[in-house]
Every structure is written in C-alpha cells, then in structure tokens.
Image 1 (cartoon, rainbow, N blue to C red):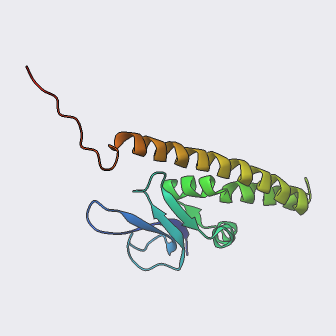
Image 2 (image 1 turned 30 degrees about the vertical axis):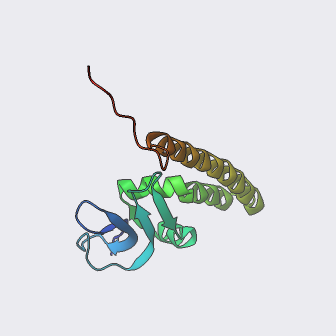
Image 3 (image 1 turned 180 degrees about the vertical axis):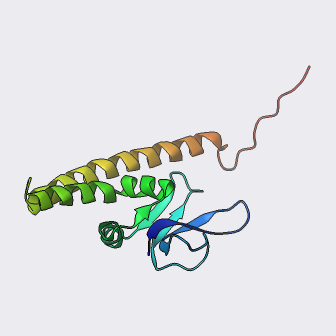
Length: 142
C-alpha cells in the first residue's frame, strides 16, 4: 500500500481549512485516511500550521511520500531538515547530540524569522485601519 501525506480539505466555500493526513494513494482527497498529523489554515497571515513532528517523521521514515504543498509545509516546520540530520546520524557522520544541537539552532533562528514576519504583518494591518473612534476625513470637492 502506497501511503501519501496530503491535505484533506474542510471548511466552507471560499474558506478553506485543511487537515494534514496520511492516506492511501488510491483514496479520494477527502475520503478515508490512516492518521491525522495536523492542520493548516491558509487564511491567516502568516498561515497557521499545527503539526506533530514526530508522527510526520515516523511516516516519512516508513516511506510515505508527501504531496508538493505538504512537502513545503514539512520543510517550513523543519521535519525534512530533521530527517536529513537523522540520516547523517545513521551514516555515522556525526552523533545524535550534534544533530539535535543543529536542529535546535535552526529552530530558534527560524522561529525568530516567523515572529518578525508576524509583527510586520500586524503593523501593516494596523496601518491600513483608521484609528478607533475617528471618522475618516471627507474630501470636499470644489
């Protein structure tokens, strides 16, 4: 049985919300799945992703292939980088402590970048809205 890690659409019309699931490759998009790994909400800025890294890593090591979008999500969350580091441990290039040290350093740097993007997005949203309690100025013609 070929397993795929893919998105399962939920939500109403024009309001998508996705579950990240492991499913048989032959199953329909919103059909039967094996295990739920997390959620993905593309409507928030930046997109909200909840993911169980350990389960995703376990399924990748079992041979499940992610779709293109899920591959980007796994890369963003660091699952593919962690898989890469653990392969290096398996080949004897370095020990597991060094791999975890590299991953935590990457994770701290990545979290700082995400926080910076969130702050910029919230500043831009605040800049577009008029101040509360004030009416927008009317332009007089003439």
